[in-house]
Length: 563
Image 1: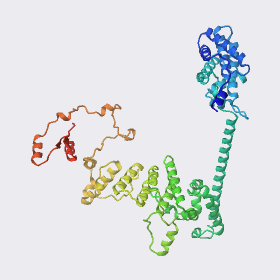
Image 2 (image 1 turned 120 degrees about the vertical axis):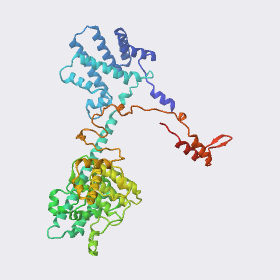
Image 3 (image 1 turned 90 degrees about the horizontal axis):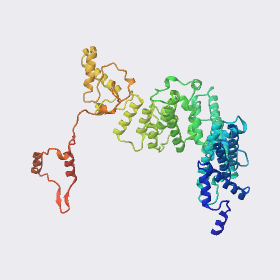
Image 4 (image 1 turned 30 degrees about the horizontal axis):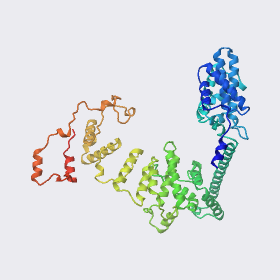
């Protein structure tokens, strides 16, 4: 088997040995016209031996080198040289890309691109055959580039005597058939996605139409118990969600469905006063009941996980867009889902019937094991005005809650980042005396101080501007911040830079400083004697040397002074 495979790989060549091959290659790419003529004569001899099976790269190289030899001889004028170069370049592009064509013709630019042939070389060939002839300068440049390509892709790759043109067989009819089949599969997949998207929209539009029909003479409570035709429609949507749940949630989050338009809110008669503040969004009750039959039918652990994931992904996209209405409802639905899962779900009414009605307004009743770490990360990755509220809900409902101090820090950092200063995090007495980091916290602390002082004395209402500045300076005592009394447009300066500061980082260095080695520091002999008198011993001495324990290392570290 090994011998037969070697025999199949052997083929007759036109050159005598490897030395002749190397000589012809070197002479063809030399700058000496005499050596190039000798190489062209050897290629002519090879053509006679090969008959019609001469390697395409050898033929094209000889044609282009012959153009250069005649160009340097000065025997032809410019127009003749352009025609000569044009014939060689057209022949090169056609022969090289010929074996790349399959059963169906493909553009030469695409075929040449797969072979790393510059696109402008194909354009040059197009100009020769269909348009005005290029200039001699472009012909010479095209010849040099093509010769370089042939040297890299053919001549330099020949390790033996055989002219095995690997690049000629890179793509054939089978490759083209594979490409066509792949394109057909992509087209079919895309067509299925479009059809599924249209089907999802049709299902949801039909659901809305059926719900709108219930508005005439029927109370909204009837929406919670769908009619027979609605049950059939909900069954169809349920079946569709088993195969395309991702697509169904994407369509649900489009405007006109879970994100209502102004016309829809007006048709449903939503009370705008019922809509909560942007920082704590809640779905209007009538709009929630409008979608509850569908959401309850889709209710499952996998759907809730997917629904929350898509909601926070959409919030992350909306952080870069000014779409407050859409952001409000996306955040409100996320808040609604987390609240339904909360163990701390509080009833706002005392009567039993009112509690039962409130239970009906929940998407699901039984608690679900949410992926809290992923949910927390997704919430922090989508910072907006609603993030502190959503973060508070997640932190309160986690199965394994974070430490209280960590929760407070997360909420404070979130409020600073989102500029929501009206959040109440129920800080402890110790946390209320934390350092001042923002201008809002300074104003808040200042106002609280003023309120307390006004209760003690009515004359504090007549405080002058100087007294206010002194009060602010007093509050900032011990803090790295200071109150600036100058009228400076701070918005023109980036964070960490002050007016008049140089861009050179060396300006932040201290003017004078000194360094001292640890060995040069003065030793406190009295302290050492006191420690010995108190029974504080040093490291134990053993046969292998000093044996240090942890207390010895700690005392050594505490005694080091580097500056």
